[in-house]
Image 1 (cartoon, one colour):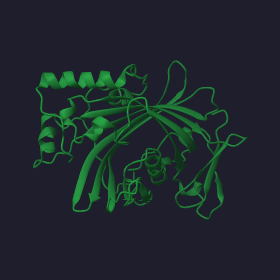
Image 2 (cartoon, helix red, strand yellow):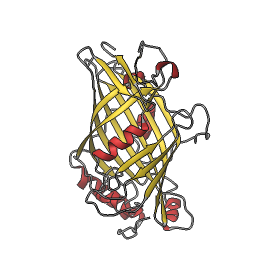
Image 3 (spheres, helix red, strand yellow):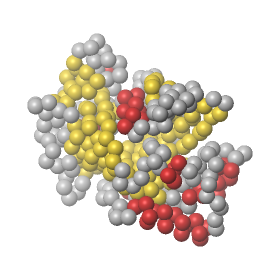
Length: 327
């Protein structure tokens, strides 16, 4: 754990400091987002947050997070950090980088916008092509096509866009055998070519929930998902463990022919319960609750051709395509 530069404070002072930090960082970004699902309201709209439960059973057959079919395809994404909040004050942060920046970039500040691309594809074997051919998906309403995130592609895409200190070189992820585990191999050189040494990350999805809904006023389709992750960064002679949760509520924008999505997302940071460290003592002090929130506004535009057909590369090779016109 990185040494915390912030001194210990009383309960009253830490609450005041959290409020001051929030106001200084956010300016006019404090307006709460409109959330529809109960999952979104209870996780993104919360001022305090306990870890997502229940935990997944390792190697169970239903451990994958299936997204609403309206998220299928290739998406151009812009993500804007709206606010940073420290519910218990800055002295509870596991790293000063979460004060200076965010879990995505050590210097990210409210108002910063980052662009990247995301892939969502069908994991149904009958709908996938593994021989380099194009598989055409039938995307009728009610048809179960098991849409999942391409965690390998998305991890590399986000890492590159956020210019993370340790760039991602390779991601090992077998969505058929164990979709809850990723092994990430990082580059040994920083962006400025400074040596970082060999670094490897093991990421485990420990809990997940999802909920579908509809805006009662506009009729727009809504989908919300939450995942709790444990990341273990293996460094030369050291290992750093971190716990986070990402909650995102997606809204299919009316009038976009199914090709634009607006989303509200939160990254919640938790301390790890190591009883032999200062961080473990702080974890006990806050009752295991989240010590930092990073809230984002996200706009997604599907990459389509002239016939509103979208295609996405799939990890096993080949391409899946489908049309969303009028959906």
